[in-house]
Length: 462
Image (cartoon, rainbow, N blue to C red; front, top):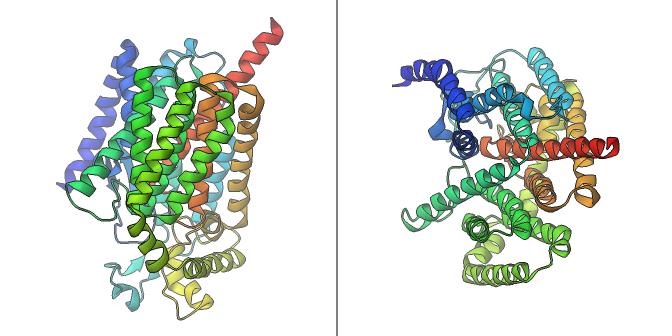
């Protein structure tokens, strides 16, 4: 069966993509369905993707060269956009492109400079979660991360150019809502049909699910505050409710805090601009429902947060991983190579920090993980990407945009902020569904910024 994945992939690429471009170009409905499937496929990576050179037992966030039906959908969407390029006024090169290219460039340099294959120590082979390999393939693991960034950039381009066309933003919002509804249904079935205590949905860990749902719930809440269509209001309210319920069912302290932060900031930024009876009723009912759910789950949450978890201890062992990252960057200017943190931790860096702590776990802070794997050059470029993004988003939110565009820009920006809160303490940022939702958000804000500039230029010229 494994051998079939190669012909299936090339058949889909060589036949499915051209047919998809043809059909989507002929039918606006088909184009919208391709977009919805593109976004939906990001939350079901296991069922919509194939993995080349898979290393499933290696402790990294990307375990192979992943190719998904979502990637092919992005190619279809870009193909349609190229054919219909006259409908896209002055599309140009997207903002943030330079930073994407710099990230890819420094990742390639780090890959080239990475150490050769390292023998897997006996302790790693006997570890309960590791490791049926004889060597750490440190020249292969970076390829996995580099291809993920390439796929992310492809998705960014597809959504960016799609949103540049007037009227298309609503379809992207609908797609995110459908993805959230689907994942919410999976969570409910896991909890009440399969009786799973800490649900994780289609993501690799309950904390990852909490992060994803906090992100999407925040985004959709911003949209809801601006929405006027009754049917869409109901759909958004259900999706947000499922997102909040999912976060509670993960029993994730950080996820719950992140979602409360996201919803609070959403209301702070948009509530006063959208004062209406509808919003007062929705926010009031939502607050009551949230209090009821939290009260019902109080015993479970209290037991985990106060009894099973030690916040100070959690932060202490995460600092242990961060200190390894500092050592890696101090010894190698471009780090140990994307995806190589676990291998080099086993090899030497864990013992250098503290021989009594177990090796092999990547840093749980995205900034330190980036530092350890791509060095200070990679960290500076990564910081530049996010500074540039927030410099685009800030003026759009504070004074430039109105209506649906304002709601989407605010939601996408806060979605990224919520992710960063979790990515400071969890292995979440590079997990495929979360990473791709971030790329969608970057694309939305970038496209809205360019649309505003174009409209402003036309207004001045007129």
